[in-house]
Image (cartoon, rainbow, N blue to C red; front, side):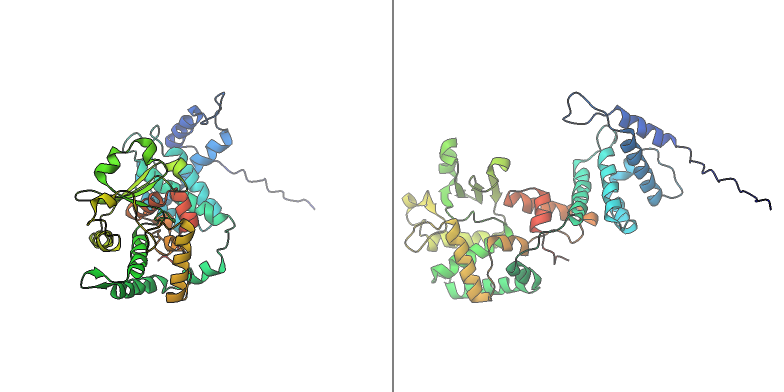
Length: 359
């Protein structure tokens, strides 16, 4: 019996578009950064990036053909499409890697924006973080962050503390008011234990200090119309240098001004002002970083039933969006601001300090 052998079907490859050919050529001219002697990217890698970019465009605009890369500037639509159409994390990561490779001034000839590249980088890093095995927080962190009422409880405690410490505009309970101020500062500024050993200083006095005198110290600076923190003694000083954070919230400014007037009594004695410890024992002696941790832990446990540290406060009041891949520029600006205040990168903010319960 004769067998009718069907010839093996030969898959016809799609003819590359002019856009793909041009993109391939541009990639072939690039060399890897920080490699000496110069080294070009592998052809296999280039083909993968070009294929991913073309495929992404067709997902967005099925009936059109790409002519340039300007469509990547619509980053919100691009990121939402990647998130919605690619459930596989590895595929999403590869897509972002390809975008990051092409989103550069040499390829985006008009309207290149660093902010948009940062959005793609943050999305890629968030996917990368999800691919890694996460280090589980300790039991206390799980309990505190898992309790959806913790932030509400802290604000209720703030109300209780101000009622117990202030009567007719005067501080009547110094320790309660100091705890109130510390917690209120940390709802807006995700410091570590940087308030410990911080000094008060007039703006004119600070400007008169030489660099060596400013070195390795933290100050709250009193200007004629402004208050601001200057930190030169914190964990990542070697990377981020001196940090300055202006206090713009009117309520917080009033709270600090009352503390300086009543809690430290520095306005009555101008000679006492400069280098007075901002946070101190009743006798004026400084509070160490460890002391500050102990005060927060002891007071929050006795008043809330939860031991809360400055690290937990940074997570409780974290403003990271729940989904970084589809986040807006405004949302990511908040993340960048909180990262800058604490003195670390956006990647660290999103991997270490992101509150898993953010909506």
